[in-house]
Image (cartoon, rainbow, N blue to C red; front, side, top):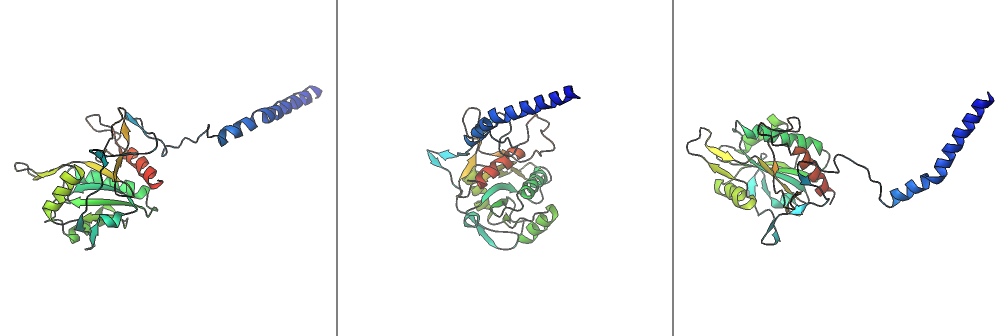
Length: 247
C-alpha cells in the first residue's frame, strides 16, 4: 500500500510540475497567435490553389473589375438591378430552364450553397436566363419552386436577349452563345463568378499568383471530380463566400 501511495504522490507531483512550467507558455503562445484553430471552412482546399486570406480582385488594365449595371425582371415580376445586391456577397450564373445537361447540376450545387448560408441575409445569387423569350417570370418561378430556391436574395432574371448576352460575354467574360447545328441550340459556360459586397469580382490565386477568376459550377462536392479528372470547386467557393462575408 505504501508503494502505491508513493506512486500516486509521484504522478501528482509530475502533473503539478507540468502545469507550473508549460501551461503559462501555452497561454502566451495563444495570446501571440502562434496557435490557431484549423477549421475546414477557414482554409482552402489543395487543388493547386493558394489560400492566403484575402481574395484577389480581377484587374483590367490595373483597375479592379466591377459588375456592370444591369436591370432585369425576376421570378416575382420585380425589376432587379446591381443595386439590389449592394452590401451582399453573391454568386452569378448564366443558365436556362429547359437546359437538359449542365444547368440542373449547376443549380443543385447552388441550392447546396444556398442552404449552407441560409441564415445569412447578406448572401445572394444572381441567375440570368440566356433564353429570355422562353423564360418568363412565371416559368422562372416554377423553376425556383422545383429546385427549392428559397433565398429571397436569389433572383432568376429575364430581359432583353442582347443585354443578357452582353452582360455574360462582355461584363463577366462568361461565354454564352447560340449554336446553329446543335439540337439544344445554345451553348454556355458552367462557371460561377463570385462578387463581393461592393460589386467587385473576386477570386483566390493559383499556385503562380494569378487570379482563378471563375469557379467550376458543374461538379458537386459528393462527386469530387468529373470523368476528365477535374476536381470539384464547390467547397472552395463556399470557403471564399465566407471570407467575403467576413470582410
